[in-house]
Image (cartoon, rainbow, N blue to C red; front, side):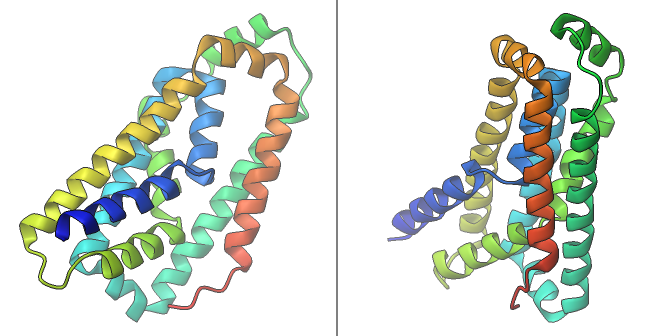
Length: 213
């Protein structure tokens, strides 16, 4: 019976993690813009954030957030503002002068941020995403049996982390494919405008949403 519940948790988490969202957008944007290594670094930050929220949901930190609405709201506002900042950066990039794809690639490679910066960008995106703790909190609350042992909780956390790693790191590898990057640079303005719109919509949606906790 417990095995079936674990499988349902993994399926639910897979659908949530693989579906488009702020983390997926950030991985796609960074991987196409700055290459595979930068994309993997950012995805690793997101993976760390996912591990943190999984542990929090499993061992009760979610309950602390529920009991302290101001803390949850602070995270929500910080996350929304950061997404709007990413929207601004994408919009500004879309409005810059168009360059030849090869020259643009060379220019971007000389301006790459450090791997540490990329990692902490990914971590910030996921730690300030209020839906992560809400989703994982409800997933553990409804999917885990009340008699589950600590070993059972740890097993689910490990499985969720592996699954998250496969999805996020896999997206980084996918979007940093040379053919995809070449297509991106040929249509950079369009892509950046789309990223600006999607980051903006995500930020405003989080900013305006009222979450009952």
